[in-house]
Image 1 (cartoon, helix red, strand yellow):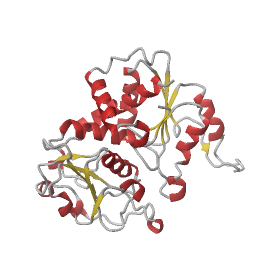
Image 2: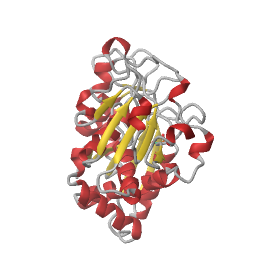
Image 3: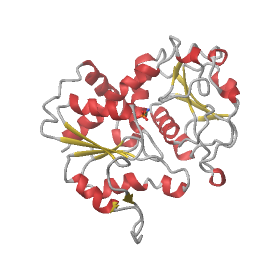
Length: 317
Ligand code: CP
């Protein structure tokens, strides 16, 4: 594998999950694979889980790891070609990327959506430039439109906890005080549909996601109805995707917060969220602290999803 940006890059999902679970049983079985190999992790945005889990995954494989926070200590980067660089940006991404590639074997990139320019966000401009100009295998550590390492970890977690072969998985929008990208919900639906689950997405009107990601999922504007019979409830906020409202907050309706009454509508469902989560906006204290909450094992599986992806990239070098 020399690229990991969406579900199609991982190939057969059953095989991928089986490989991930094997890695989880013995995460130090391949410490020779990454010897004298270097992972460079580049962050244009903040992170807790992705940073730590991906670094740990690479160390489990025997790799050296370098981390660059672009906004802390590096030169300010220009991303537009043709710009007269007479402002505060001292270096162009088109030089910076091949230079970074020259110091490592594999690159992970985190670069969020601006939520200002939909066309630019959905072109995945920064991630695509790394793929094109670094000369190295590149994986997404959450980009403008997707978060595949998170969705892979979510899939592993569901496979570990499911009680039926084809569980009902519900992605529900929930309120948040800040405008958030669609990356996590996009990827989550894409991966859950690809896994063959019974997938429902529920949100207030106006929060429709890109149909390229939701194809194969049911859309239900009635959250209570959607939650009926759910085996897994995945809560997440996102901002509007539609052209005229792109990146806007259209609702902060707290009646969409996942609480115990809503969980009672489900088939004794597990609660999931990618974290970080705003308690009592997205989910109540009671639900996230309940035995049904999978948020911690889900975050722990980020190490496993990252290790599976990096292992496959190392094997292909
Ligand atoms: N879920 C997730 O990607 O967390 P971080 O933003 O902390 O990396």
